[in-house]
Structure formats: structure tokens, C-alpha cells
Length: 162
Image (cartoon, rainbow, N blue to C red):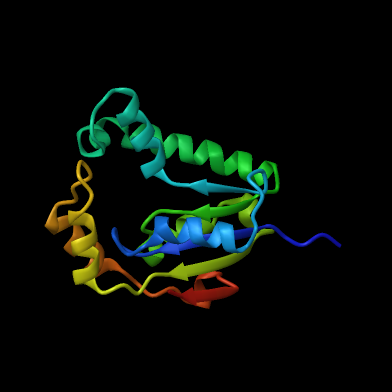
């Protein structure tokens, strides 16, 4: 019997270490490049910004909707191809996670929440070190205030706190 594919849903505010964790996790677990897919609207926006010689912040408003559509297309392709998925977005609210986990194609996936419990001050320091990728303080505070610890009731079979 084949093992089910795995969805790793990263949960944490900007600067909590989600994207950095991916590289360490992929290397430590010997993931083959064709066995998984990282879903991240940030990645799409960063590529668009590079192509038009602008910063992430300069491109965000113009490209976020396209990035969300591209992410959905990639999600569907990953499901079709039976790939493991690493969902690299903030996923701070139960409501946003529930909507994503409700995708019918994810029913056969083992769902693992990776929760980043990084101190807020550390997150603020880290985002200050990202030139061209500014996040207004009111947005950071809003995300911090909406950050809900994941639970098995949401449909996760496993929850890992980083």
C-alpha cells in the first residue's frame, strides 16, 4: 500500500522563520525535487518583482491576485501529481486554514501543521532586515492578534511547534 502524500501547512507571522525552515527541512529529509511542491504567493511576487526590476513591496498590490491564482493552479497540479505539499503562507486564522484544508483533492493527504511560535520582537527584527519587503506595523500587529494555535479539530493529524 502506498503512503499518502503529506501536506505541511506552515503557520506563523512574517519573520517567524517559515521560509527558512523549508530549506532545512527539505535537506534534512532528503526530499527529491520532483517529490514535493512549495506553495507560496511570496515566491510568485518575488519572481515578478525581479522580472520588472522592482522590489517585492512595489509589486505586491499589482501581483497578489495573480500570485493567488498561480498558487491555486500549482495546488491542483501537486494534488494531481500526488506530490507532498509545503504551504508557505502565514495561515494565521482557523478560518483561512479551514478554507484551504477543505479543498476536495486534499482529502487523501496526511495534514501536518507546522506552528512557528517565534517571539513577536524577533519577527519584527527579522522583517526590518528585508530590504524591499516592508510590512507595515499595523499589518504585523493584525497578524499577531489573529494568530491562532492550530488544533487537531481543524483536521491536522499532527502538529509540530517550532
